[in-house]
Length: 109
Image (cartoon, rainbow, N blue to C red):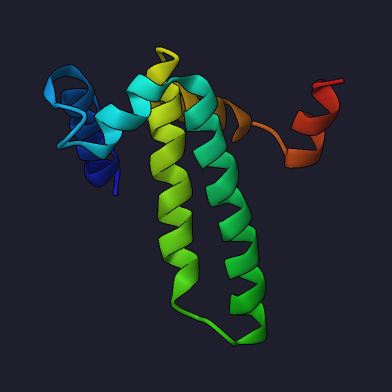
C-alpha cells in the first residue's frame, strides 16, 4: 500500500514540475491555486460522505472506495501545493498510536 501512495506522490510532483496544463489535470489544478484545490477537496469530501451513506443502506456499494481515493488524491495535491507530503500526515498518525484516541483528543485542548 505504501508503494502506491509513494508512487502517487512522485507522480503528482512530476506532473507539477513538468506537465503542461493542457495535458495534466494535476498541473492545471496546481496552477489554479490553493482556493481551487480546496474547492475540490471539499467537493470530494462531500461526495465521500454521500457514498458512505449509500454504501450503508446498500444502494451503491461500489462508489465508496472510489470516492475515498478521490479525497486522498486531492488531499495529496493540496499537501504538495503547501510544501508538505503524505509523510507529514503519517508522522502525526504514528505519534498518535502511542496513546488512546480519547487521550490524544483531550491533549489537544
